[in-house]
Image (cartoon, rainbow, N blue to C red; front, side, top):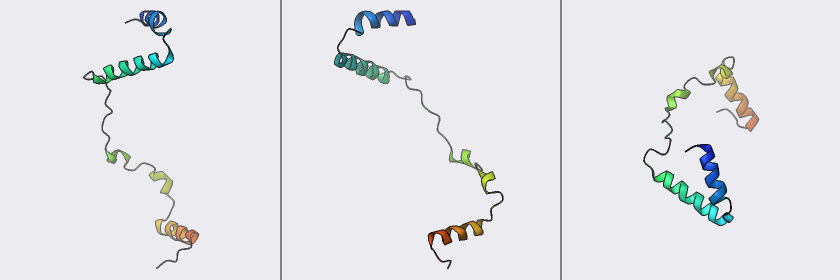
Length: 80
């Protein structure tokens, strides 16, 4: 269906409807589309391992134990 045909249908039949009826029509169209097999685009499943190594450059020059000790000091925790 071309854009001009859709625009003509909208102008002739839909635009003049009260807002509540246009919302009902919208809901009906949405339900109809959702019921169509293959109508929804399914997002590909993601694997947690895709995040492996992400942001590692942030930690390159930081000693892990010094970092933890600093955090504990900020929180008022004493090292055991």
